[in-house]
Amino acid sequence: SDLVNYRSMRYAPSHLGAASLLLANKILKVSPAWPQTLVDATGYAEATIKSSAKEMCSMLQQAEKNSLQAVRKKYSHATFHRVAKMVA
Image (tube, rainbow, N blue to C red; front, side, top):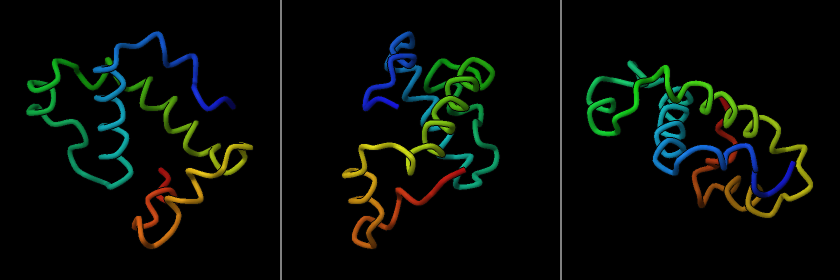
């Protein structure tokens, strides 16, 4: 996997931001993961960003197998609340 995922370049930055928020809410078990307030704030329905969030989830799950480990290792420490270890 590349440091930059070129498949994600087909999406607007706002789309990727919304998808990452959806994924974060799913990982943290926030319910509902995509409430109406987020639809109103972002302009994206959950169905519109769901496939992007799934792609991000797959990338996140494959992170340990990636050859580029510096950032993942850094954010695996307690100092950063081990956020790199939070996987859906």
